[in-house]
Length: 310
Image 1 (tube, rainbow, N blue to C red):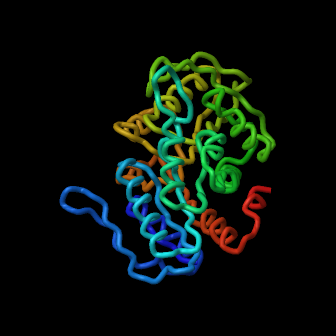
Image 2: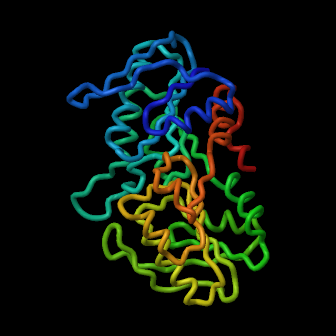
Image 3: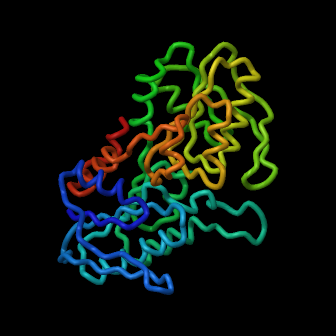
């Protein structure tokens, strides 16, 4: 196999390559003066099984365009199979029409990746599982539970622990955590008045005297998690921590989390952590390099990926 990295998360790409004991393919991915993306691959890839590691995180459009141009370059260089490894799939929250005359941008991105020439996609914790159906090529969607469940056991234990979903849409994910940890489940009933703003309405489940762990796929502005933590403490919880796969943490989210009643926020490096994240004591980062590396190895050897989560 060959691994090729875009510019969105070079440290993660290097860690994945180290876990697989291979070198990253030599390539140039840079911008012209007018910010057009230019790609040149400096090694022969004809007939090779090539994996492109590129999160479509901020700046989402630039990183997406990089991914598409790299795929096109590989296709024209006669790579045998091109797998787009997208640890964080941007535009995933636009997976349906929330109102009239609005796009389904996740479907558009799926079409772009497919038409560019990708043979398959490997991603992690898609915001909505049905996005896999937007692609006409195979999609492997990894889950963060093999990373986070052992970390919860190690740092928190399970006594008096309750897993909490910050909204109704995340109940399936939270139930999976609760089942693996053999603990109870609670749900936050919230009403979102407009994009980026959430209002906590009710706590469904018994959290009094319990240690709560909020689990979610994405933390963006941090408003949902901070409001949920306040609601849980008001309902009698002893402490609140959060485990979230993708730390988007836009605008003033890091400062908001640091000033919140959350005891700790644990995220992964599916998105390259900012300097603010690295210096904030309340935020801890888990690496997905081993998990993604193993998935890449299994795809390359035509082994089962789903058995990673058995």
